[in-house]
Length: 181
Ligand SMILES: Cc1cc2nc3c(=O)[nH]c(=O)nc-3n(C[C@H](O)[C@H](O)[C@H](O)COP(=O)(O)O)c2cc1C
Image 1 (cartoon, rainbow, N blue to C red):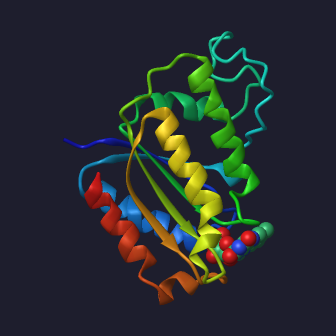
Image 2 (image 1 turned 135 degrees about the vertical axis):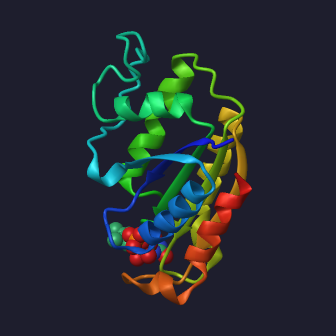
């Protein structure tokens, strides 16, 4: 049976490398009969977590109402959550980091999110795979904390400019990730 997949992107570059992999993944996932909800963090308004600990007390996930409150119900319903992102300064871009920080609402709100599947698709300019640690390690620890099962990571180094991804097997691997779900 088709699964509900939430894809959260981090790049502000619509024609960029991680978006190309995102599209390859989504096309393959939809071809398998899964339904995909896409949240392009860089084109949404999501502020940082205020640590007010009032999550879900107003009926919404975050009391500081922003676009995270559209995403939160989709995450609660999802079978799988896929993060796609470039590396910025050895970490996540601020826009998707704000979304990740607000996942705190699910914990404070006592939501039962255990058992979901997740995956990571990431790219960076440098060739050194350790550059990926800044997104890979928080991704893996987040999955462990939330009791999500990581079904795969597509980590593509050595891509800087728009179109560089086409010189790699990144899109092929992103599409293949859909088979793991
Ligand atoms: C603000 C900024 C910071 C970046 N920081 C890094 C970095 O720390 N390490 C790296 O290898 N690439 C870095 N890059 C390069 C991007 O990761 C690379 O261009 C990637 O392919 C962009 O993906 P996108 O096309 O999906 O946006 C940075 C790019 C920008 C714009």
